[in-house]
Image (tube, rainbow, N blue to C red; front, side, top):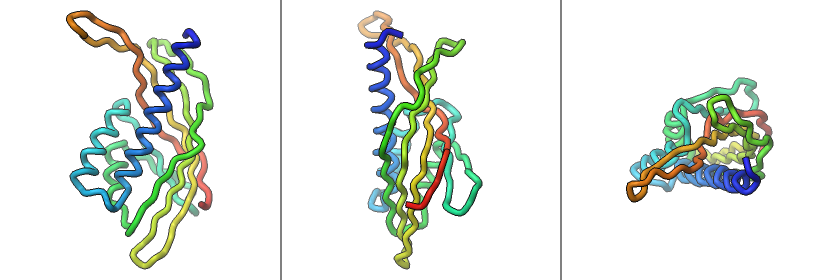
Length: 167
């Protein structure tokens, strides 16, 4: 892949991860109306390959639970906290894109997620989770003015938890 094309794809990949970060914050925000949260969930789902899963972890538990993206986002919207704040930071590629036999490229972006939830009683839960996001880059085509135009698109795949620590 030529360096200029790779740079453009890297930029698009990171942009999609930033978009997901904004969507997750909006969905988790207790000030977001139910209808707005559902609209944002639909937008977020457009970023993913079919059957992608999100890993969820909790301090003090070794087990990581995985949910389909829609189920994860719906659960996020219904968390039993008075307020929720979710920030993603230190977003970076940790692997180069590797070409697959089917012609797609696959890479991994690592992010850190800071989660803060406050209960009605004022109890605060905080953690920081390191997550690895699989990124798929594939060639697609669209019709513009009767002509078929090829372009590269980026979709997100599974989001795996690699570490959870106290926030």
